[in-house]
Image (tube, rainbow, N blue to C red; front, side, top):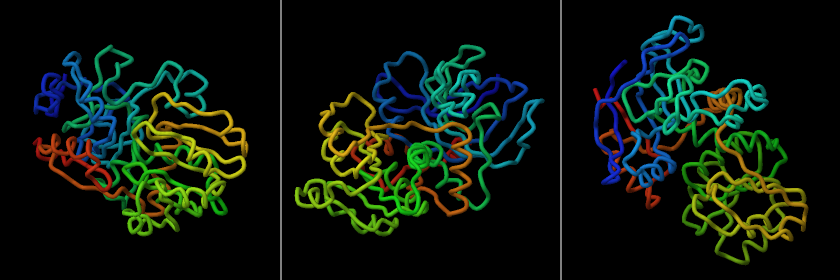
Length: 345
């Protein structure tokens, strides 16, 4: 076994403690990656808060780093290559979804970067809040030159999560897109929609983020607490990307959709209640998306390199991970925390 250092959740205190971790010895198709930068996601916050102290929990599933070792059968990467890894590190490879390049929808459920079970030895996967990660080369991605590795880390979860619906729904020139919620997911959805050529607006509870919306390239902002603004925007958008992480009423957002428009939920993924009439009037569609398969993730990174898109981040030493989680819990970040893991050396 290989050893490294990382931040493990303490179920008793809901805090992170620095500890020694074990990684598997390299299999023929494995890479050893020195983790340099890893994002902090709402999923991490929920996982830490829900941790009961049972199986070891090391969060982190959007990271960039450098290859430090390769298995005997690795062909795509060499030591010293810059790479990125997202929230999926394996899948069955055989089901229709995997064969279609949608490993994120694997019928046998994909192996998650943390909190999953290794398909070969049955051990728990431990995440990227650590100095080294061992991953199959097929689930690592070349980090394009020119992308800042710290600001690129959130692309591997937040980025591909919003890229998936925008790309699958054919967003491009002539498409009218609204992004509900201007946070870690939302700000990247705005950047992508603008770069794809769509007429892009932001939906927010107040006008406080109007300047940020314009800076990101949005042409308009709809204040969701203003009935007049909601009425004016009714039936306006072909696609509404809903990144709001808390439970909320979907009806106002469905009404913003144009004829045959789509509301795509990528924030709160719990139970929802929908009145059929809100779908019927205008033939509205309700959809969702989560992460992305390998082809989509690689395409998203290439698109980001072409259009110089990265996340707006606040970079913290990993020793401040508890502070990052506390602030994330009160939405005190614009727009994504990223941990610098070099302090684990």
